[in-house]
Length: 256
Image (cartoon, rainbow, N blue to C red; front, side):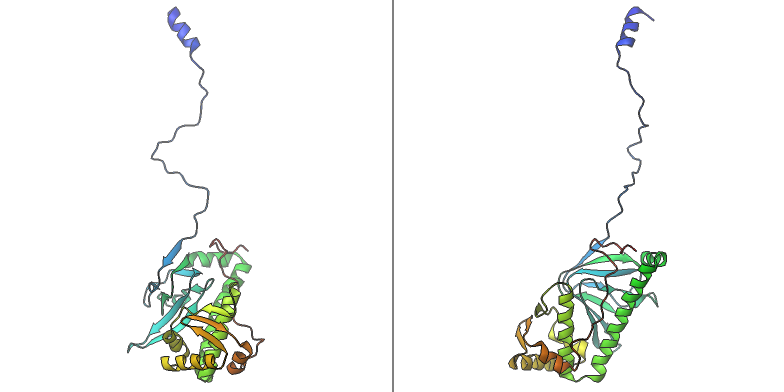
């Protein structure tokens, strides 16, 4: 080595060995868990339809939705109204296909939960299993409530009970118990309660004339809860079907 080459070698900066450089094309896996998928459903849009394959559950995050079935001769039967925290999709567990359809009554957003993930979650934790069972039981109780409405109550009882139920559900979400918006139409209410549209409208008008309600379009204020309880024939101490949502605020399955 010449003298010039030797001086150049000794004057060069030392390099410390570093980690091997990965090719740019190499995939990098994030350590952060993926966020729960949210799906927006615009007013009038269908979340899922009867006959569709069942793979997912949906938890309402924002808005109000309705479920309904259509008979062979085209008759529509509204089977439920669903608010934030309600779980949709259980109707497909048994057969693998949805038995009803779900439509948004206003602009909604839902969390999407693969059913297989729910099965693993409930199998790994007794607390999670209890919460899942309570959620299923709540849906069963709501079906029983509907049968009670349709089978034993006269028209005014049905409407009074419906309004008390909606009031309680809004209150549970932190909204006013006495003033709220009815997102469903009078026709939807009639279908759910087994009444004609004209009957529902007439009862609303009568309740307003008697000072029980104040109605302006879809805005409704309950002015006399005691009278509604008397008409319903139910006790004010009645406890409506309720339980904690299977998801937390971020859309993750609740920790055990």
